[in-house]
Image 1 (cartoon, one colour):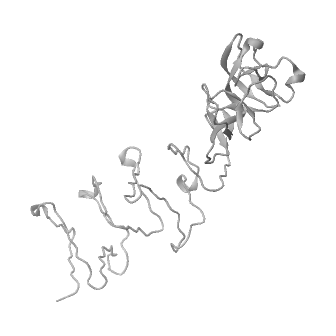
Image 2: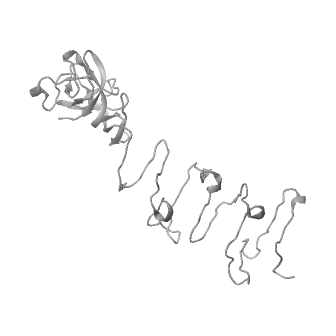
Image 3: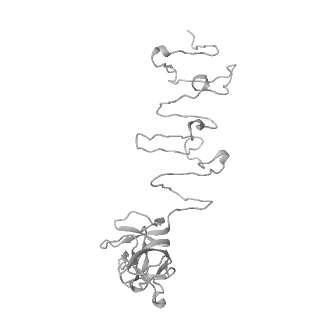
Length: 288
């Protein structure tokens, strides 16, 4: 019996519709337990210019499925033309072992890492827009940006340990304590002022530094930029541009009416006027 079966014709049609499902089964090669589906040139001495797995008359299949523990696709270039499907979406299902998806850049021999992994446009040109939508995005390593870094939030904050015995909330003015933790301010013109607890009102921290796990309560303290701050105008009406300092009201700022006492105790500048009583206004942090 010949070891090779050759069927010649143009086209060759296998009509399996009568068999309930139309399955073509190719059993394994007994020599090396491999199955080959090869595209030969017209003379059988080389490779065909193209191999199509498609629907009738070369129309797209509704679904094409490859099921394997591991799938390798070798070639100089791998292209996914998804344009007929309205947007060209490429979906990657989750890993059933740990619910993670890996996009890995391997070296040419598969034993190490590639020198670089590109996510780019045609011919390595910049994409008009690249989006990552996630609750949290983590980068391990240095981040280099050749363009602007734009952030929709307001202030630059840094995490500090907070006194556990006090009720602290966004907008409060905080001062340095003897225990190395921050406490809400209690006295006027306190030179230990450290900043304002970020996150009150319409402003959220755009950058948070020194984020780490700790047994102590840690809060982001606005050190630069715009932040909403608790103020008390009973010590003087606050106008736009007025310098602010710590007030006797716990966790509040007031107008810095005495420039000599305010030196070293200024929190920032008022961005909104406040005429009477306690309130919450936006300020520009400028510790001095």
